Amino acid sequence: MDQNIITSDDNFKAFDKWLTENSVKKLLLVCDTSFQFLTEIKSYIEQIEKTGKTPSGNDLSIIRFDDFQPNPLYESVVKGVKLFRETECDAIFAVGGGSAMDTAKCIKLYSNMKSDGENGSFLNEEIVPNKMPFLAMPTTAGTGSEATRYAVIYFDGKKQSVADMSCIPETVLMDSSVLKTLPVYQKKSTMMDAFCHAIESFWSVNSTDESKEYSRKSIRMVMENMDGYLGNTEEGNSNMLIAANLAGKAINITQTTAGHAMCYKITSLFGSAHGHAAILCDRILFPWMIENTDKCIDPRGEEYLKTVFDEIAEAMGAASPKEAAEKLTEIFEALELPVPTATEEQFGELKVSVNPVRLKNHPIALDEETIDNLYHKILKM
Image (cartoon, rainbow, N blue to C red):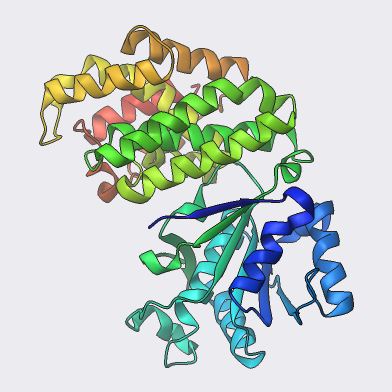
């Protein structure tokens, strides 16, 4: 689907236009704890709450929902759906990172279901797509969640993956000012999440010409705007938001591959941020893959995969795949992201933690022994 991108320019004039064009009267604002630090959008929303009117003079009620946590629970989504129904909202505005996006996506999907959601009933009910106006405003340049059909919630302690094209926000509001106050570590790790999304999508067995073009543009934008983004320039921040969105569009088509499959356990064992864990893995995976194209399982063949590596190298401004892999390592080292130290017991946990479904998207065959060897290169002993 085509996604409309609007900006915060002219005091959110495009946002006001979106509200008018969609005849929004009651807006469910799904926001996480970061909202209180987002000076500009917070002020804009509070003015509407105070007057009950949009800047253009239309009546608007805003109902806030923030009763959820990182890695949101199914029960929180049920509360959100209940609030949406009881207040008779007619649109959703999600502001935040991946958790806020996932919560809002599920509220949208479940809002027109027949059941009340008790005892996990939403998870078993058939999704009926709806065209409810849905606006998303990402507060990090990383997950790209605002561009994907996927959401993750937890029910009875188990991860539930929800997917439907109708949960993709039709409009995305980009405000570069939200990135200015992010902690440096979060800026680095979220940027690497977007970068790894773009790279992994490029080599995925599910890649298409469309997804590769998204990846190519995203990789180039990350490379060109890294310094400006880390230096907190408006241009750097604005372009990194676009790069993350493009990478999200790429993985919406292809899904991620072994790098992401291998990074989740690193996050849970060592507390590394998701993007930090992803680049830890991909900086080792990439050179290994270049040397092992003979194990290619992409139906398009080994020679095709080699051309993909050439395309990734070109997007990174490198003369060869080997040079691109070296550049990936140089970027990681320049960011000064720490490498966790693992015990043999933890290495044992890591090698059996990888989701086999994720590996089906990876273009080169991986077995448990190889995964174990890679983890020993990814982490310190």
